[in-house]
Figure (cartoon, helix red, strand yellow):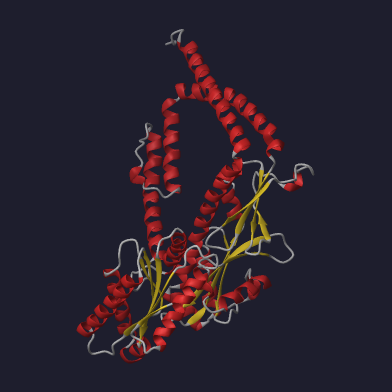
Length: 509
């Protein structure tokens, strides 16, 4: 049965109309892009760079979280104590295979020496030199994500090293875990980010001393391809990759040098849309169900890739063949989401006390510095148990764990919404209060001390009693010399003064 005569002209008419609308929209957006680059293009580049930097750090933080989680596992502690090379290498090989992009996983003893055949590891002399920083007192406490980028000898290949300190429950250093990742991870991620669509920028990674350590690969302008006149950059921006010491350096071409490229891009895009529009509209009219299902599959895969809840996905397939694809993807997506949520929870929670661990504590301390600069009164508190070692020696580590959980319960019970209580390790705890004064902190600490002592007497009267020594300080906002390290050092000195004053008391620093 033939189609009516008006069907084909109708299809062409609709295609022409939609194509014209698309071309007009593209021309308008192109003109807006030109105006943006002429007036405030620098601000747009900065905004995209900050957004992309956050995405890069978020992806790298997942690897650091996994490494930190492994460092807390009992099996790793046992391997480092036994120091049996075959067992160590077998575990490292199996663990490395679980992480995409990992090119090396090494275990080191407490002296920073590689356990196993050094020829099979990617730890160069430069890696070993950086590792010595981890042996300095409180280095990891001040470096939320220690990571360095190294080059392999006699090659142009580079890799990223992540480090994790391995300690037992008594904070005795057992060794280190070192994870090496290929820089292809950075390059592949960078090619998917928003800034790569800005063709007049050149981006590289700088270390903490502003020295270039890596140039990101991708569709970006390189100074080597420019004329001497073009190579005069108007602006250079640096974006900090918190919580590492790295920075992104972004350079942008002068506006007068690439305005013609923008106009040419607009013209070519409009011409391409004129041809693509006819194809797209015709296909949608002749194969509506097929194209609709393709879009649905793409959307479902995006849910899986971004770990969004599959239950929120509302599109349904129209074809029987596509329904089978949906049925196969959904269970896998739900499993991935459950595993991701579990991993996220483990990476942010202390396993014994269920309080926040070092990672959310470091994030809260950075937030505290920002709010203090905005005029908010912020207090950093460090708490330490008196007599905890004697309790462990006399009553055993199991009883020591019960005392730690008892204190954690009292901290959680009296913690306000918006504040943070965390276990830093061993018998050391921390709290961060927002919008408080000295009177509030003193009353809160006195209440915690009394409730903790009362609970010990009621539940563990047969064991030696532990007391609390506390040091606290208020973060000095709008002080250019103030930083996280300085605030922590004041609170730590105040805690030392409380210990020196006879313990079971608190001091302000």
